[in-house]
Image (cartoon, rainbow, N blue to C red):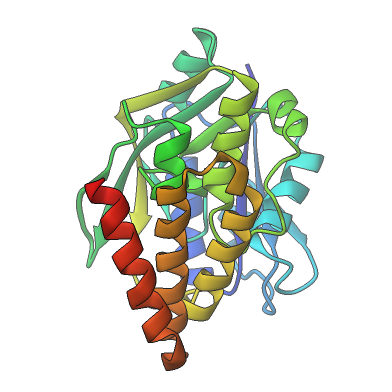
Length: 263
């Protein structure tokens, strides 16, 4: 079985070095490491790392979904493992995912822990929480760094939706579930989400727009309560970004949501 590691990066070179090293330290290394740069700066890496990876430059700020999809399109392996440039894998990550694939999984989602100030703590475990309703409401524990998927299935669902500014990882799993494909969750495997403030790519305005696009795409799958819950999230981020005129509308929707929760 061959696995390609795809790392989208955008102006976070110092974090990128650590992300790549976590791949190079794998107990079962990938067949190739593809770094897809969609930042305005070039990728500057030590020679000993450059010899072991392939770097491709996209149009600056093309977006993480575009970068991941491009990486998938040139990957030589049958399976794709995505890792964001500011995240890490434990050293047995690919080995555990590989075992699940050999046992029949077309997509593997591992536990997601977080690292803040170099301290790693438990964060989200998607095990027993993977269903469409949970994905429509909140993120039960999925991001680009804890997904391994067959290239065949990735193409079948059309890859990451480039129209979604946020929530593209949740959308990927929703499309797989809709097809009835086999997703294996691994509570004993660890991807590590780095918590930091440097070069964050999603501010309140971007997140609110992402929620709007996600809600519009999956409105038909949402109950009235779930739909209003997503509207509340969207309005909250818009208010946080400065649109104070939405406070009354937010409060009105909050009352409706509470009434639906009671009845």
